[in-house]
Length: 106
Image (tube, helix red, strand yellow):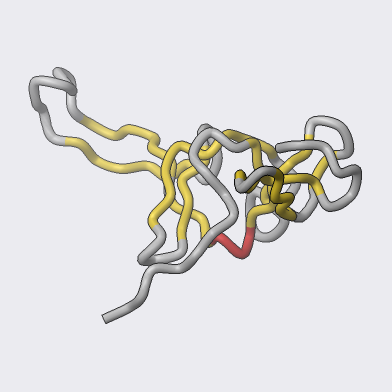
């Protein structure tokens, strides 16, 4: 049994892909699978998938969907200074994420 990986990223964080086919592109995290250490990013790493007709998908056929990317291949993006690492600041018992470059709250 695999243990869940602790990650500093959260849903709806802006991230940049730093390795692989989509290198340099940015997007927003849609979901995180901590047991497999993977993230799905909006509009990136699109793959074609055949879909059967259903209530949701009336037509069926070939559809492009986002595929998962490994956590090690993405980096959080600070609004001020771009791709950076995540640090933590503890104030009054509350832990907040900060940018390691400029110190701004993420």
